[in-house]
Image 1 (cartoon, rainbow, N blue to C red):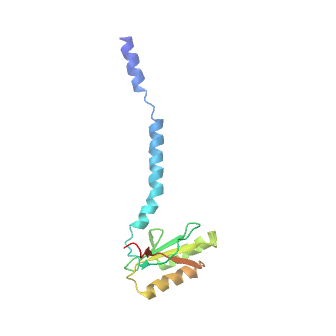
Image 2: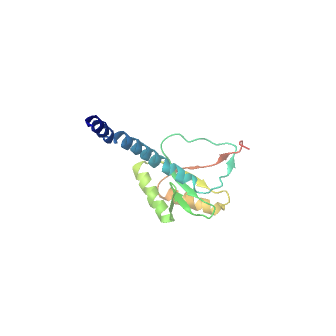
Length: 137
């Protein structure tokens, strides 16, 4: 009977440290992937262009305007005043920051110009406009 008790004692001592490590790694992966997926949830029909450049460098200040004219910064809905405030903060962190404007092609010209003006009023002078390649179709 003593041998049976020793086997049960060995089984009851399960080390959960590797399990906790794996769970933490999975949690970190989800936290990193979450902001990227938020940006893609905003429905925006991007216009096409046959020419264009892919910007290289630091992370851009991402501004999105959907078909209804709602503003988003980094996937989060913001007001016009908040857009200017966040632009100010980005400009103070990095004076060479570039804004990436993604606007729905159904928006009128005046709405897009208004957003560009809001971005420039925060100090950011480099603005790239997101398009899709016209060669894809």
